[in-house]
Length: 176
Image (tube, rainbow, N blue to C red; front, top):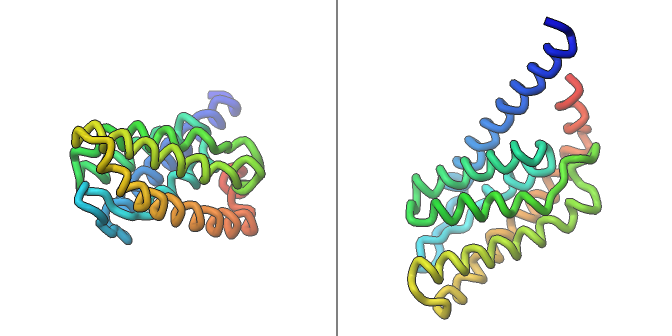
């Protein structure tokens, strides 16, 4: 095996491992850690999206999409299974506004991304709830819970990413 082949293989294994770890952490943070039910629709406030945002700023897009879909989907299968199909799609969509192509987690792009993700998430769950329950009037009440959940995750992302950037985490992770 050539050195280049070994380096590519090591990077692939590292990416898959980190993706799996993020999926597991997203599942746990969403389903069990700081899991606060709200409303009668089965929704809950959690900080799993913080980890989705971090994965999106750290991993190449296909890996971040995978971690978000698996982590969010598993969390819903464990807590509110009817939401799992919508969650898988929505969690993948909230990855899209982020970039991992810069040396830092926080950059101009990723400072705005949580706000865009909040709008995607709130809209996605509004539409999903309307389809699930047959009314697009009742889900309006759930928008505030979606905003609180996504907003809290955005604040935690900004704080976490800032701390990790001060540690040069991204550089240390990818230059082993």
